[in-house]
Length: 85
Image (cartoon, rainbow, N blue to C red; front, top):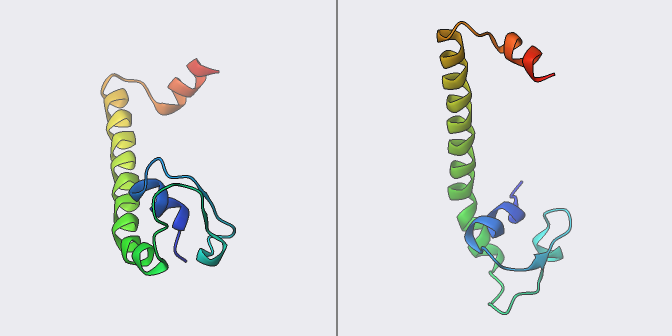
């Protein structure tokens, strides 16, 4: 399923619209700029999907790096959780 909301947020920043159930036919474009066509948005989806996947990978890597740094200092994740309670 294509996530039109993600595409619009990433490729049309500052635009204003509403959409229901990620259905292009339910997309109401409220911005002064021309409403992108379904074909335009559909063509952007693979690129946006790849960005989302890359961001998730980078976030997971940052998490793993942080855990490794804590462990190098002799602090476990459970230790840190206990301190934050």
